[in-house]
Length: 147
Image (cartoon, rainbow, N blue to C red; front, side, top):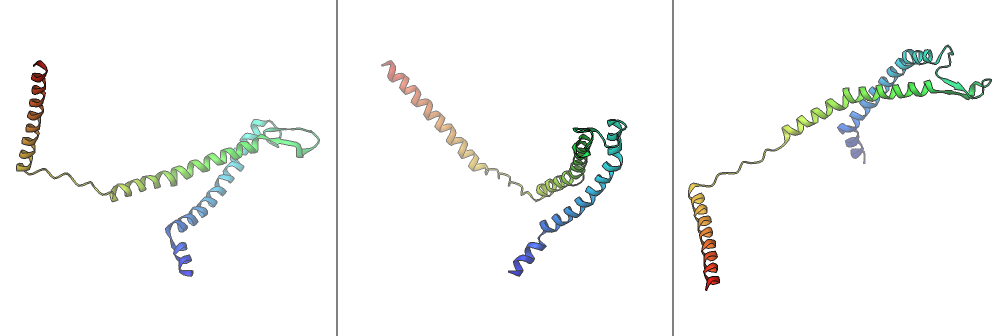
């Protein structure tokens, strides 16, 4: 049972997954810092002088009723940046590498060996004889129809 667990853990997919989680976490922190410190102030400036950001309060006296469109836009920008970087840095190159490896490992189909000259000649004679026989049968039918 422990051997099976060891095989599972040491399999390449699990190690790659662990690396992806660590890199993804670090990259998410980077994108979050970018959106918090650069994107949020731009969105807040677009929302007006109000420091709360782009949105409106349903009840002006209650800050808990503030509908914050800026936070949704920031989350969307964070998602787009993360998805684009993951795709262009990890997925696209890995797909290209996998395609190259697959092409290299693909077995080539064996070429058809040409028929020996005597076999090719006999096959040609056979085909001509069957054409002549078919033509003779057709002419016999025509002559029978005339009688």
